[in-house]
Length: 334
Length: 285
Image (cartoon, rainbow over all chains, first blue to last red; front, side):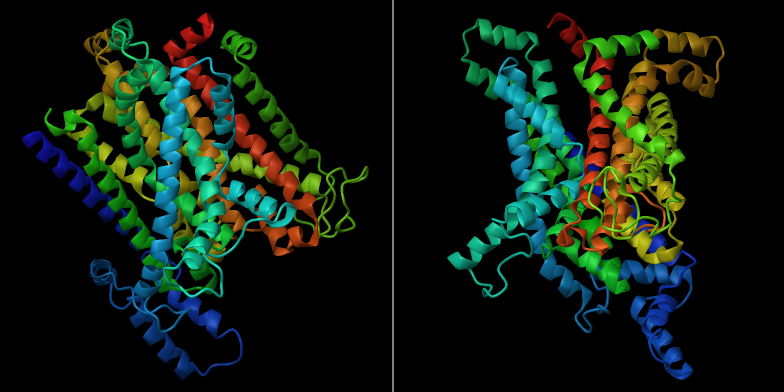
């Protein structure tokens, strides 16, 4: 019992550290660089037409206020933590006066939905096929699957999404290539809307799964092909345990543990991929919001999304870590 | 060393394929040194000519020869990947070896920081960096930022090897013969770790090129230094796909995918070679 508590405390400590370091990086990148975001916004908004000096001074004042940039660096630092704690990043400049938190809350479900589905599909499918490929080493079909998975794996999310966009947008236009759902449908829970959401998620999902599956496949295949040489597997075989049962409860079960740890370690990377994929397909999630915010010069929104992503990814990792003892009895009692 | 390479080429098909693919890419990159046009000059050739004898990969809407543009771009892209990989390798070697060898509180501290960097999503951070720097964003700055953020995963790997090396007899011999910690790490442990470092280098180059391409395509880097991503950025700016100038997009994509698969195959086959179990497996089967 005490080791379980210690495990939980260590994981929660790690979560706190991730959030702490992540928010610090976000703060120092945006506050401690010699370039002043206020002056940038001013020069961007006053480059067309002439504005009186008094108006510019007023604008400078209110922008400093809005961005939380008044006072010294230490004061700003504390104010920034307060903003993070309250999840209040002020109003967005490009969608004034909608608060940044509302924009993020609107986009977050799309990203979470896409990301969770894609991760679960690629993790489950990759592990299943990889386990089979490691166990049945002479199967031609599984070997071919391995080659395909390995071929897609090293391609970055952007390139693959881009190629899919071209293939299904220009060469063979059968799937919707942009947006999260059909434009003119009302957002309510009926067959038409849900169907349209699913249809629109096919391509983003496909690109995330195609890239993601290879890593799990190869990891699982390597793990399984090592485990099948263990004595206890040979013993089970000699004892007449059916091959399915050996694969399921003797081999895969043990190989799953490092794969769960691997999942926790790769959440950040998958999140990067989801952001990029969203942008390619114009999916209305965090990624598209972030990139639009950069193009619009929306300082509060960029800062808000950056911070929220760090906290969200850290939370996802913590959740996987907390599930881990369910799988591994050693973390429960050992 | 050479014998190992020769044996790998003979027995390991993945390694051979990786060498061939990467050889093609590097040849294209080296050709940039004999390019007839300065890379940033526009309208040196007639625009939008499809692939033909005079312009084997066609010309783009900015009046540049796609082939020569591509060779400069892939050179810069590779150089970027190698720079990031080199700097981050140094970081992960130092941190991994120290953490693995010293153990205890230092190890726990370093690994907590390490795990933090594994988890933190880098893309939003790099986007924030660009957002603040804008026109001050340069090739080198991006490389430094990515190296500073991308060392963690491999530091953990190196640490695990260093931990097992610490318990080996030769380490004790070295300590008893009066070597300092630094000497033990550099002279005794480093040679054992280097093969793994080589294989992670390939993966790290892949990772950094992938991120660089992504950031450039979105226009979040210095768009005046031609790289594969910047090339695609300009193609998108000129809506090349809609205009039917497919060769402006297809060839950079094909070349960069070749690079990825080549590097990846090298990494995988080296990994297999390093691991004695899978090497034995290959010899037997």
